[in-house]
Length: 123
Image 1 (tube, rainbow, N blue to C red):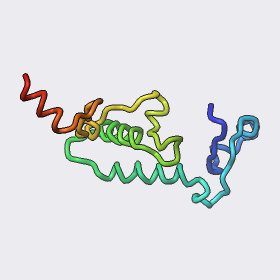
Image 2 (spheres, rainbow, N blue to C red):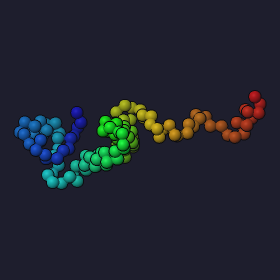
Image 3 (cartoon, rainbow, N blue to C red):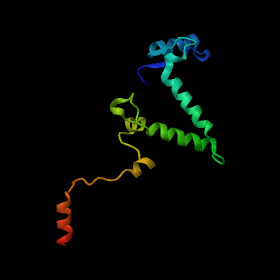
């Protein structure tokens, strides 16, 4: 369970039992009719809605959501420690994406051009 949870003051959070649970577990309510105070959640909802508008012919809702969540979870987030992606924080490693496959591999030990030419010439 997270240390703090922020939500709006929607009707689903109005029962006395749930309010008691929330106060015991660090749940904070944002002011009613002020979505800016719950900015991260509102931004996520906006981003996900925009991705649903990009439906391609033949794609199912399930495929679109899988693509969206994979992209979202593998994108580095400046709000997270070390500018890491949510997947990297949860799994402890970076996930391979089509973009990471485009990166050129750098040899562990870089050689200057003269050394490389010598090795090729002296074989």
